Figure 1 (cartoon, rainbow, N blue to C red):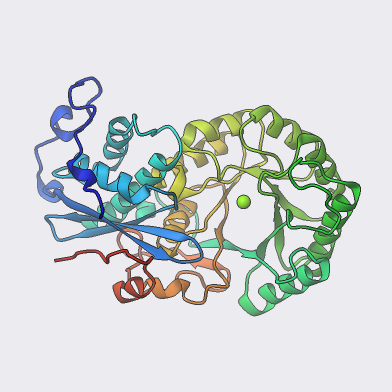
Figure 2 (spheres, rainbow, N blue to C red; figure 1 turned 30 degrees about the horizontal axis):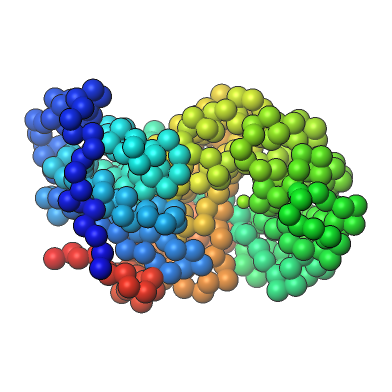
Length: 411
Ligand SMILES: [Mg+2]
């Protein structure tokens, strides 16, 4: 039995301070293309290699916007909870509606975590919607474009885990057969030298093994591909520094999340200790948290996740802060084609975009979810169609829904 989260009382209703609704802000006089109202918001979860929460925002103009939120327990319920704050609002006021949702869900935790994730899905759908209503691509709403093609890096895996030769062979295959010139491998998979994986300490054999993986992969695809390596927040500062130093002699694109995300000073200490470029960001929320990473020099490359961090404008704001510090942006991405295209649209619109991640090369049906081709030869050609430039194939969505989910009710 599912609960109706829309019917819950608005806990902020009795407070009038910082009410960002259209009525309060005096933007209730719709003219021309502004004569449009949000009539409904719905979600459906797809069972991909991650649970992809697709979001649809409906209007009385008959135009529908599609977005995507990162996974997280309660994200669909939070979006349902936010829907009353969007009904009757003008979807073209994307920035105000983002702030409105942040304000209205402050009690639910809109500073960081799944509430921000839920807002991200809605915000992205609003960009798709606004682009369609105005007849412009989403990148145009973000200031225009720097590039026609956005580079995509492929997250790679092998059945043999972190065997150096297996990783090198897979790197070669992904470059030659799939056409990518940018890759990422996990560096935190067991090497056989571990005594205890809980204590965040790397033994000398583990560091040698990881350096062997880095050497094998980077030398195999040398001059054909850039390669990043991900550590998933696994190590203590001392071990992370020794690992970063051990791979300095190789062509590492970046070393990702070598230390846990909570303490900025630890991240900064590791980053500043090495010439190996260090990236982080996928576990941080909104521009505020990324600003601290960037300003403190705690990253060489910042890696926000758009469907989690706050959406398209929030990612653009992060890229803008990063650009002031000459820091490139590599967009973490495990999304369906919808979230991936949202990332590509932002990557097109900022000068300092390095690449967007693709994390589903083993799935087989990833691009069935939309009618368009999204990734080809290791890049996204930025669409010129209004909005995000992807159209959901609802039959494909229905075929891959999480058990118990219902398809969007478009009636
Ligand atoms: Mg990562």
